[in-house]
Picture (cartoon, rainbow, N blue to C red):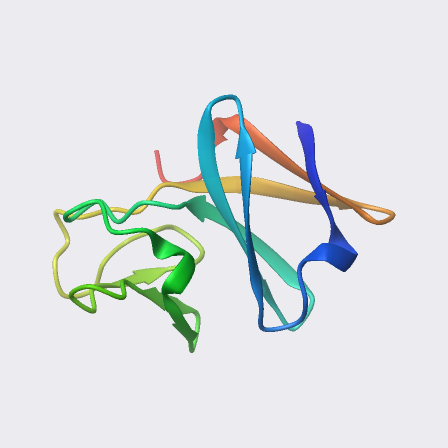
Length: 104
């Protein structure tokens, strides 16, 4: 696992894009729980950093595809899966395991 940001850098109900190992990862804070997902919609590559987060889902800003923050599955289009990553919090550090995707 690698440190990608500080918890204090991702406000509650906010997000932050970080780069790690040549990938853009979107960190999302929902009531103190940090999620890490790829910052590109698997449908047509739209950046997810402008997405709406609601009820445990993140919605693509281009076409509204909704993906689970937990496993990246899309309710409406099951063939589209947003990559999610394992997150660990340590003091004020956010660690992400780039090699371990949660939805494999």
